Figure (tube, helix red, strand yellow):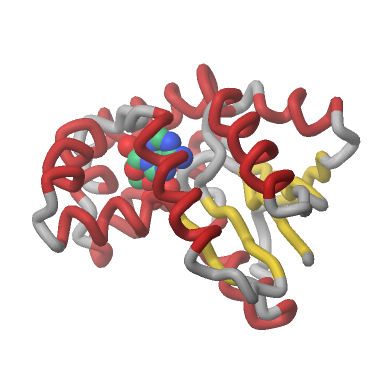
Length: 177
Ligand code: AMP
């Protein structure tokens, strides 16, 4: 199996690069943000709870997203591998992911971290917000909050994956190629 964590702040291009990697390696794409937006669109109780946090740019609780990923791993038994997009976002999530994968006798091969400066991120998200219809892309204060959440809770995962010798930094500006 090939299991990749696609890592980076909001607006770094994780979704764009995932699409390329999935095509090349035929991986199953698991984006917790997409799964949560699906729950919101379906009006589920989980979606309604998550929306309150997402609209403020705050992370949803670890147990919610860990449960979602666990279900998706179980429901794709024949996968060639997975690409994790927007997950893990905290150390607890990263540890849970290692545990879930080890129960399936597999592991994360690499963490690919996209580097983009804050000003570029804000511009990209505001411009995406015009088409995406995402409330959390429409407001500069919410975008800043998401970047703050990333810096406080998610960026420390770089050290987590460095310690496992799985961290690779990639320039996230310039052409998509
Ligand atoms: P994204 O589509 O990855 O930008 O995620 C949008 C929002 O969904 C985030 O701002 C969080 O509120 C929530 N979210 C997505 N993935 C996670 C995660 N792994 N942990 C906690 N919250 C998440």
